[in-house]
Image 1: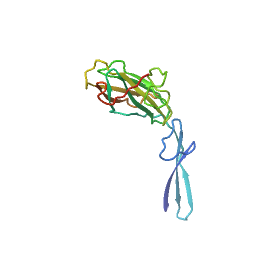
Image 2 (image 1 turned 135 degrees about the vertical axis):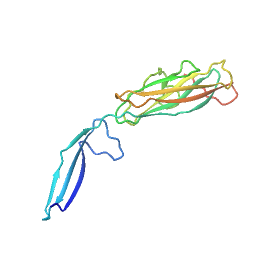
Image 3 (image 1 turned 135 degrees about the horizontal axis):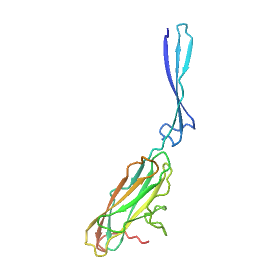
Image 4 (image 1 turned 120 degrees about the vertical axis):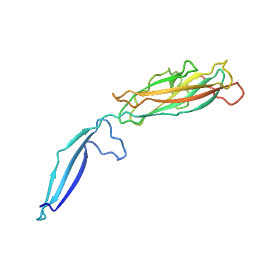
Length: 196
């Protein structure tokens, strides 16, 4: 009769072990095997191993779009610029589609801001997608439009930027940030002026 039964579960990885808090990389192989060790009445120890189960980590799409709910006061006729970041928080490479819109303003565009100075990169053309981002990488962009020279003072305009993942058949849900700009008269307050 079996006097004692010990069940031990060993987890072996087919790649170099990563810290427990790290997200497994896409394509990583994980092997699971259970070992049972027991003693009979004579005190003899016996072990048995289960079949090995091998799993391959699938890509999980995830990202963060920041920063939401920014506010600017911009002089009439001046450019509107809002900086945003897209961070790939999934476990594989991903590229993100970008779009910008405003119900009150026309010609809202997105530019790269690779030097992270809050302005469109010199000579850059408008973009509709990021470069391919590896896990943990961040893309810096700016959303750009302009306040009409004949806008009514204190009128507020809402601009939205939306990002969509593309790497998998089940991408992470789209995310949208909304920013607000208020039109002011020249000289009434400190304003943001950007030229390109």
